Each structure stands twice: as C-alpha cells, then as structure tokens.
Length: 202
Image (cartoon, rainbow, N blue to C red; front, top):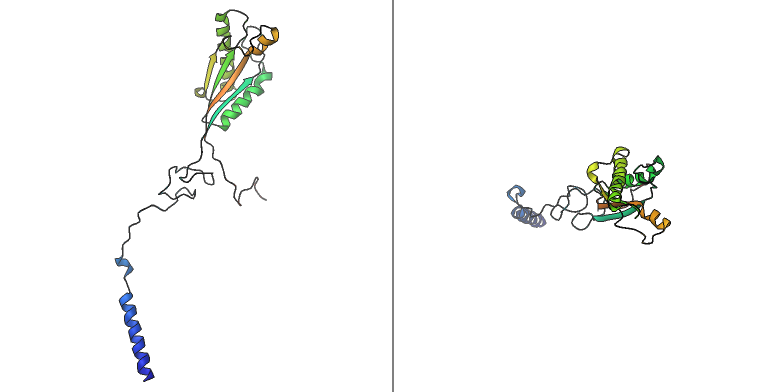
C-alpha cells in the first residue's frame, strides 16, 4: 500500500513538472532600453548624453562633465625701450607663463593688449602699442610654439590708461602689455578612487 501511494505521488509530481516546463527558445523578449555602458563611466547608454567622457571623471547623471568658462587677465611687466617694441630676453619667463597656461587649456585663445603712456602723439602711440602687442605674440608663436590661430594682438595706444595722474610713475604704469585668455576648461575633473595614486608604485 505504501509503495502504491509513493508511486502515485511521484507520478503526480512528474506530471505537474512536465506541464510547467517551457521551452526557452520559444520565448522572445524585446529590450526597450540599452543598458550597456560603452564608455565605462557608470551611466547606461539609455541615459548617456556624452559618450566620450574620460573614465573616472566627475560627471552628472547623464554622463557629462562640467565645462567651466575661463577668462583670465594677466599683466606682462615688460619695460620696453623708449619708442621701441624690442623685448629683452629677461622678460621671456613672463611670456612663457602665458604659453604654459595655453598648453594646459588647449581650447583657449589669448588677446595681447598693448598700451602706452600719454606722452607723444595719439597716432604714434597707436602704432607703437600695436607693435608691442605684435612682439609679444611673436615670442609666443616663434619661441614657445603656440599656434598663431590662438593669438590676437590689439594696440590701444593711450586710450585706456591704468592711472589717470600725469606723473612719471603713472605714465610708467600705463606703459604696459596685458594678456587676456578666454575659452573653456574642458579638462576632465577626475574623481579619486581607492585605486588612485599620485605616483607609480614600485
């Protein structure tokens, strides 16, 4: 009797399992969204808006890094000889600082502004300030290999004095060159992880 009950139980279980079996090859499921992460930034393709994000960079929920506007002005303290645009080599390190900044942010451009004192005629000051601005851009291009397409030189003559007084010290301060760098900071803001190190380990 026990054997018969056991046999019937096994038969019932086998029948149930046979009815519940489904051939997986007959089932088709359409994936509505692309759940892959092609650039490895942790954002699925269905939400991705910036596919070229650097791996490990700080991003928003759409996989895009932040772009910061750059607008930097820097005085270049070059003492030009009287009525001359000659730049002595001792002033090259100041110009090199501008070149290094431009290399760090390759999407930026720089405008070199030439300014003169208010001594002399307006016509001569306009020409002289342009020559001095051109001289600085020439050093950036020829000595420090900055693409000339990124360089603009403008001579303002004496029309934009820094100091209004008519003293020798004021005129010296008005005789200046200014570099204005503009553009976007598109470098990746990298996030620190437990795998980040400052230097290669030995």
